[in-house]
Length: 164
DNA sequence: AAACGGCAAAATG
DNA sequence: CATTTTGCCGTTT
Image (cartoon, rainbow, N blue to C red):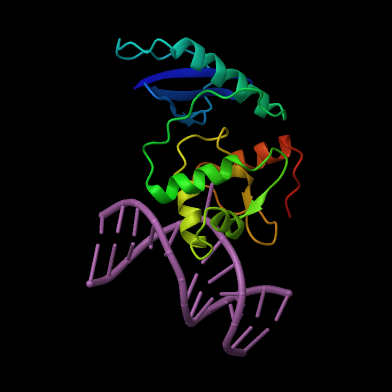
């Protein structure tokens, strides 16, 4: 697992890669805009440079309200069966649109598991690229967020989504 | 086995 | 209406 920092206009995101692809993408932790790259372990991930670049580009595109043209391979093998169902359902939500937790649950084939769907979203390891922020509460009101709710707002507003 | 969520619909006042 | 209760379900302890 290799971790690297990814600089954006909103701070430095932290990405973790496995041999399968991008496994984790975290929001800038301390509002620390000082961007020093973190290098760890000298293991060989030949595609790392490519993936890193793809991630960076995709990330910046979304942050600027554009649909990403290309995504790096995502490694979601860490999640449970259910979680992965949810996460893949999330990826099918186009930029600028939103779904309710119930809809996501249904899309994942567990119409009943509304609440569990919420937890699964919170467990999503790849922020932004896996749009957990496009899931709102039933009424269209902003729901919760395990990371800063602020990010949820920011991302949505960048995508031109209004919340009540 | 029990508690805990990024929820939602029904019941209550 | 604004609140509280009551189901539901996959994780986590």
